[in-house]
Image 1 (cartoon, rainbow over the protein chains, first blue to last red):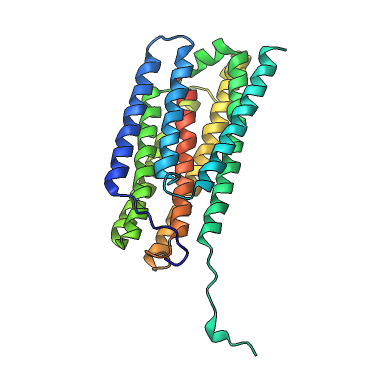
Image 2: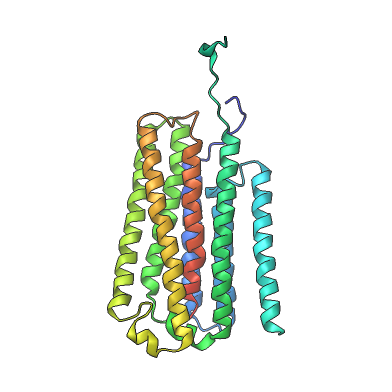
Length: 95
Length: 204
């Protein structure tokens, strides 16, 4: 390829493994939320969701194999959303 | 006069993909905003949200999660197939993705009609008698899963269009950025569901 991209071909087996990991994480998150963990239920479910989304972004969305530029932009968006959530809750918790 | 026999086809895969990512970022901010609305209302009405979330079917939600994860894998594999010049396999994998998307929508149809037949829909009599928090929960449930379902329909159209491009060899092993972009869009739909699922179905 003359424009020097798309050189990385991800193997089919990699995607199968990623799917298996994602399914295990899904069933684990269903399992832990069925337990009575109180406030940790929310934390646990969101933790599993975050791990799953990082895996989807890195492998399915090729961020791991693409130029770092995309991953950095993605991290910027996550940072922006997180700070807006933190600021909103600081407002609600301490007003 | 200019010689038109040497027209160079303008192509910028990097730019095309960057554009798709920027669109994905705007989508993430849109859903991110809705997630913030959800969390604030949940924080203000914990009991009502707890009661309302118990109404949702965890099994249907889990089934739809599995469907979307598998469809994400098949569309990702379609890119590998195109790169390896396996056109037929790429078309099959994309077809499976579209099929799974339709199954997702069928599940959603049964879920929504189930709720509606129980009288739970925006503006219904039963919801009017419920607490403010429950009205908010179901309002957000219909708005957010509805907006997500709209993205699924758009995705089916997008992937269907790219399937046609693959069929007429407009998308091939050395020129497939639109397939990558449709896959990125499909993974975005999956990504949003990864958060919608625990927030509405799992956390009660």
